[in-house]
Image (cartoon, rainbow, N blue to C red; front, top):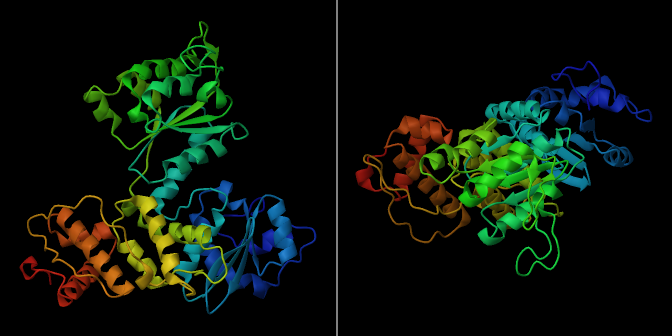
Length: 445
C-alpha cells in the first residue's frame, strides 16, 4: 500500500507497516532486505488500482496479515529463503519466500501475488500499456471492442474495465453469443413476455435488463446472427430494448463490452456482420496480442496459475529458472489457456517436488499440424519417450520446428518469435540432431 506522495519506485514495506496504527515499523536494515525486489517490481505494476491493494512486509505476523486481509487488501509476507516458495496462507494472504540471487523469478512471483482477486497479471510492456489505456477508458461509458485470439484473456480485461468504472457496484454479466442456441438468443438477450412463444410460461427479463446499471460482455460477438444485429444496434444506439411479445420498448442503462477472435472488418466485407453495428461497437478498440508476442507475461502468469492450482501442502511452490526458460521458449498456440493446462499438468507430474523442473513441463499437442515450409528441417517420427524429460524435449523440438517452418526456415525470425537468441536456437537444433530427432536433410546446425 502506498502513502500519499510516495513514488512508484519507492520501497513499500516501511510506509505500509507504519501506516497501520498497531504496527511497528521495521528497522532500516529489515526494510532494506527487500528493497531491490520491490524497486524492480513496483514500476511494473499497472497503477494505483494495483499498488493500493497490496501491503508488503518482512515476515508479516499472522494476526496483522489477517487484519489486512479483512480490510480487503492483499497481505504479502516476504522472506529470504534457500528454497523459494509462493503459497496461499489464507484468503488475501500470501507468503513469498525467495532467493535474492534469483530476482527475476521473485519479481514474476510478486507480480502474480499482487494480482490476487481476479485482477490482470501483466509484466510485459505491451500488457502494461494496454492496462493503462484500459484504465482511462474505464472512466467513460463508451462501448469497447476487445479483439484478439482465443485464450488471450479478453474476459479478464472486460472485468478489469468494469471494476475500474463508475459501474463497479453494478452487475457484470457475460454472455457467449456462440454458446447459445440461435432460436433462443433473442429471448435470452432481450427478454420476453409471458406467452410470447410456445413454452414461455413465465416472463423473463433477459440479459440486458439483468445487466442494467452495470456492464454486459458480449463474447464472440462475431457469431451473432444477422437477424439479431439490427436489434442489437438499436439497443446500443437508443439505450432501449423490446422484449419478445412486448409492444413498448424498455429503457436500459448498460455499458457494452464486445469481444471477438474474428476480424470484424473482414466479416463486414463477407456480408456476415453489419457495418453500422461494427461502427457502433468499435468506439474504442483494444487489441490483445497473442501470448507469444508478450513474453514478459509468461513467467508472472505461470506463477499466478501455480498459486491458483497448487494450494495444498506438499505440492510444488515454485518454478525453476530452467522451467521458466522452457515456458518462455514455447510459441503458445493455445495462448493463456494452454499455459494453464501446462502448469496444471506440471503440478501433477512434480508430485512432492519443491519446484517445477523442465522435466515436468509437457506441452499440448498442436490441434493442426503446421505444414513444413521450404528450407525448414523435417522432424523425424519420434518413438515413445521413456521419461518426462524426453517428453519435454520432444515437445520443445516440435515447437521449434513448427515455428521455424512458419518463418520459412529463417532462424533469426524464429528466434525472435520464440523469444530466444539465435545462439540458443542453434544449440537446441544441434541437440535435436544429436538426439536423432532432426532429419539430416534439414540442414540444421
